[in-house]
Image 1 (cartoon, one colour):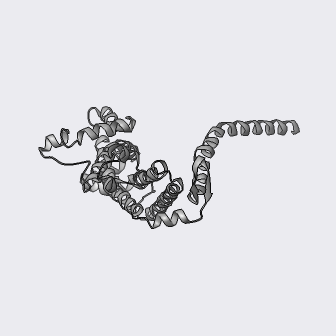
Image 2 (image 1 turned 180 degrees about the horizontal axis):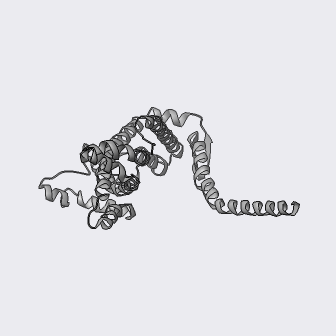
Image 3 (image 1 turned 45 degrees about the horizontal axis):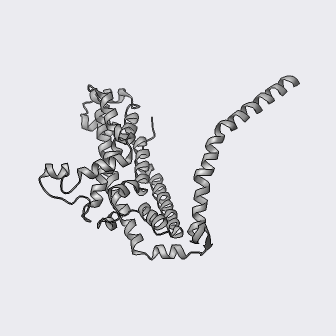
Length: 298
């Protein structure tokens, strides 16, 4: 009995060691690439950047400067406006595409690949193609509309232009996620509803939406977080000399300008901490509100 217990103890320790070794790369990567930079960003947000990578603590000066800056509040409004333009429409279109792909149509696999394609294409290539399409002088969109519209340089519509590209880029990924949720719904629900005389529309609102709501909730969180953190799309579509840059500048774009253009890493770090807090607040509100519309019953 004693020898057996020793053998089992050694085996358990060996399995634990292999388990730690397997998760070590992920843990190390998380510490080095995520946690340490975030802690360093918090420290920098209370500091003033000096030459040669030095800094000195300034307390709340960066936050006071940030909250009293009109440019900062404009970036907040731009970010919120971008979320309003992209999240509801994007999720609605993704759900429509997912429902269509969930039906028995020819070439369904090919359509899935086509809709998912924008997610595997380099963002720079996507932005470049859309920038050509939105060109005022020779863009294909103005050619089709037979009207000269300043899609990228008009401050009143530049954010709508960015939202169109963002929705187009993300709709395939969201649709694939929602499609996985739709395929987990038992066909027996629809068969029973058909026997009771329910129409397709009634089945959608009373069966499909409640049953796919957990997946819809995950997609909503991901899309909101992505929209709040938007930077690369705006950076590649809107040039620094563009007169509409003020109307398109998001929080992350403001962080980039302050940290890497102006060299004020302290203020830029404050913008990052504010963005993280904003994402945390939005996520907390979503988790609080999910109880009213997300259905986890099987």
